[in-house]
Amino acid sequence: MQTGGPRIAVSQDGPITIAELMDEEILEENIIEDIAESLFGLVQEKPSLLLVLDFHQVKHLSSSALGTLIRLNKRIEETKGQLKLCGLRPTLYEIFTITKLNRLFNIYETRELAMKGI
Amino acid sequence: MTCPYYQDITIPSRYPHAKAVEDRIVLEAQQTGYDEESIFALRLSLEESLTNAIRHGNASDASKHVSVKYRITQDRIDVVISDEGSGFDPCSIPDPTQPEFLSRPSGRGILLMRAYMNEVTFNSKGNRVHLVKFRNHQAGSQAS
Image 1 (cartoon, each protein chain N blue to C red):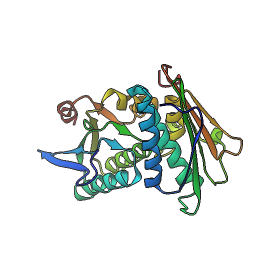
Image 2: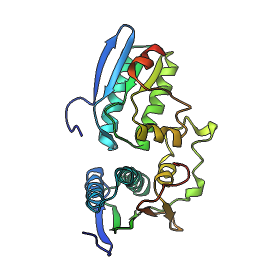
Image 3: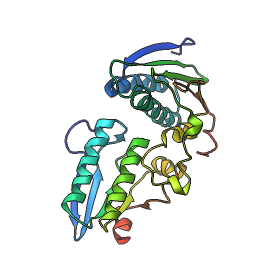
């Protein structure tokens, strides 16, 4: 698990912003707070943000992290942007199905498919 | 090595202390030969229950403590987590999978614990939770 450095790697592809989560475990409160600060910062910088959030490095996720994603999704929708999730390994996707949050979020298998979905 | 007796740890209501306990229990479960699926379930459930104890039970008051008792055998893992809070009624938590609650940012910890562990029971006061994970046993019905 990454213990220092940036929690997300941000890149741009045309109008689409891609944020790759760098931690294998998004469980601890301080990590979740750091990620939230970075992601909400992107929304603040770019109104109507088109954001693809790439989870392919993430192995563990807590309900607190899910709460942050829900708040982020709400904020992006309020500003007429879009949020797409991608790269979730099966164990992580199962968390979304158990909580039925796969109905709330737009989830794609790959980054490319998520970008096409915007 | 497996120990038939409960190990007993008391920590202040601080996340780094909780993480250290979580890592210790997970390591012992790995050393006892539990598979990746069980370890995933255990880590997630420990995180949820310890966060609940610190944040909701003890209101993040570092002067209050969280008690963690655990026992890992070849057949099952038992973890009992208690806080110093006034407790809560787990039945009072609305079902977060219902459409009207789906966009609520909180209230999913117990759902996940019940999905990934074989047994999740609370004491009557609601400030102690007992988690059980059996070896080679399918997780709860919501995860299957």
